[in-house]
Image 1 (cartoon, rainbow, N blue to C red):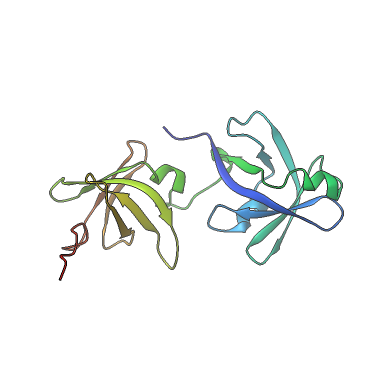
Image 2 (cartoon, rainbow, N blue to C red):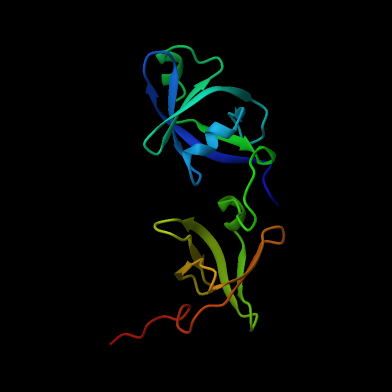
Length: 174
């Protein structure tokens, strides 16, 4: 089931003396915050806060949020997670939210063999890496590049892949 509100970042510190909050983005880019008019303090979307202004410092977003007017107000927000409504974020075709990939079953596109479940997604370079927990409890790192990917069906929590030989087998000890 897809969550209606997605974690998009964490307030990590204050910025200046006028109540700005520096946010570490949990998304592809801090630029996302510039496209959002409101955020939420909770995963249920019950507590909304308007975004009054955004600027960027390196890979961080500095937010001016409604109701936070002093450095003391901002300091009380440090450590809080910010959420965005799924419907407020537009993704390019073929892109998915990491939160929708985690938990998907991974099977072979050709044979239907079960490889495991995605437990984490990282982006260390120019492609996502899926961390897949296999049925035997081991972990495999899988590059989510077009050559190896089959279908991604986040609604049914299922991904098919076309791995090269040896990707899901353990190396023998010498």
